[in-house]
Length: 236
Image (cartoon, rainbow, N blue to C red; front, side):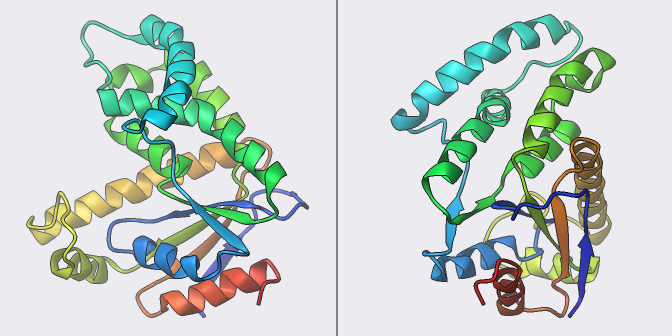
C-alpha cells in the first residue's frame, strides 16, 4: 500500500482527533463519506457554523476575545478581515475547547473535515497581509500551540497533479479552478501543498505535533484507506 507514516513526536496516547487534508480532488469528501459507515467508532464533525443560531454564542464569545489582538495588528494599507475570515479566526481560537469537551463525553474518534489545518493554511495563504507580519507571530503561536495539543492525527491524501486535474474537471462539484488551464491548476495545487507543509511544520514545533498518515490516492482506493485507519485504532 502506498502509505508513508510520519511521527511528529513521542505522544503515547491514541490520537482521537483526526483531520483529513489534501489538495482539491485528492478524495477527502469520498473518504469522509465512507467513514459514516462506522458511527459507533467514529464521529464525523465539522467546525461551528456562523450561519446557525445555535452557534451564535460561540462566535460572540471567541470573536470578542479576538477583537483586541486584531485591532492592534490591523494596518491601514492592508485589507480588513472578511466576515468569513473573522469566523475562521474565531473557530481556530475556540474550537479546541469544544473538541476536548467532546472527547471527555465519548470514546469515539473524532474525524474532522475541513479542520484547523485547512483553516490555518487558508489564512496563511489568503488572509490579510498584516497577519503575515512579525507582529502577528504571538497570536499565531498561541493558536499553533493550542492545536498541537488537540489534534492527534492528520490523514493527508494526495495524488499526481494529472489525476487531480482530471478529477477537478470531471466531477459535478464546482471549484474555483475547474475551468482554468492546466498550468494554473498545477500552480494552485502547489500553493496549497506549500501552505499545508508550513502549517504542519509549525504544529510539529509544538509538543511534537500530530502524527501524519500519507496516502497516494492515484492508485489507492478509499476503502483501503478506511481499512488502514480502522486497523490503526484497533477497530478492524
